[in-house]
Image (cartoon, rainbow over all chains, first blue to last red; front, side, top):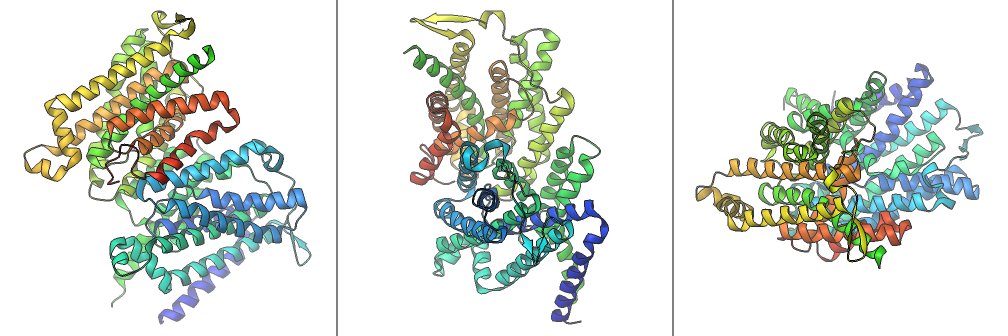
Length: 313
Length: 287
């Protein structure tokens, strides 16, 4: 089988697998929807961490602001969720461009702290601006949109919409990474100075990467709002940004699908372990530490390296 | 006037706690280039060890004198077994590793001590209030300010006046050359890490009576401490000191005068400092 046939076979297998998920029952379908939403979120973060080499600790800002935009427009103005979805992504992208503009001036720990600070500032706004955001109680009463006359209140339909979003983001990211722009991002990660010497406006490309990642996180956030029909300031909290980092690292930073696998692992650990013990974060911590120590390329990175090693070149 | 004086005392006391945290964070970063996100965990561990020791001996002073020892033991094991393996990798891997440890420590504390808020009892000598120049202030906060000043002074003397301190400074400036002139840098690393962890644990202990003890207190202090280090400049003890006092005061006065903006103030402060001076106020400009 040549590469093209393999790739098509991979897509077909993935689509068939996703199509069958709603047959597994409503609990599993809800869980799968959640996994895919956070998979999109983690994959978008990986564009910054894994492909551009910047550790952002404030990615929840873009996920959250998109969800807030959609729910606020729906609840207060009665706008359809689809228009809200588009608006949410646009707001996320604009916000990412603005936050990125300031944050990329520094790197390393100051970058981490700045991105976190911006996200926290946004969270303070969401807590204080009660009349619009509902404050700490959150904002409920969002009416899910309909699709060809069917309401998205249906679990299976919700899942399919989210799955389509996931597939589109996955496809987009694969194309992006394979494109010349993707090569520039990787070049910045590998050796920023060399890229600068080669004449690339590195700062501008970092901003592009940050903005795209923010917009894609907005896609995840919108689908999150579609799934839960509710939003609260928790989704702007730094700990959600931390969760996304864990997903990226577990699955494999610098791989496209890795963070999605990391998201699945994280949420499975959370759901399975937390039903048995209160101390599920302990296990997340232990697994994460083991991963950083012994499997720095992540689960998928490791699998991919094994596959490549097997293939005679 | 009295209100301002009270806030001043509170702000300085909070600044002392921030200094005990950020001094270690900053030194560890300056010398070892290690960003220890689990530093807040040692603050929390110190506090809970103090709680256990106080329960056992009935004395706050015994708790203060001893609580850092088990915390340092945990820290040294962490440095030897885990962080050391990552010296050759980048900052970000250390951030990730120590980030993983924060989950482990917080759940271990929850397992052993539960999730309720506990309190460390103040010794009789320090309970109650005292009148200073017509202003009534809690004795314990005054003790805390004096204690912080003393620790700061001792640290400064140690770094600037002692032989080991000179080695630490040499290591901060250039670890490679320091190795070349015969300084045992790995040992120095372990010692400074232990010192930083010990300071954090002592910070947690003296914080116990005013902030309370609970799983999650680690992050509660870690974020402002990181802000202090970033504002002060990573690797600079003087920066950590000045920024601790500054952030402590801004936070306290901010909460008193603009309660709606309380969450904003110190983040905003950091954003402004980082955008105008990315290396921090006293930074050495290589972070």
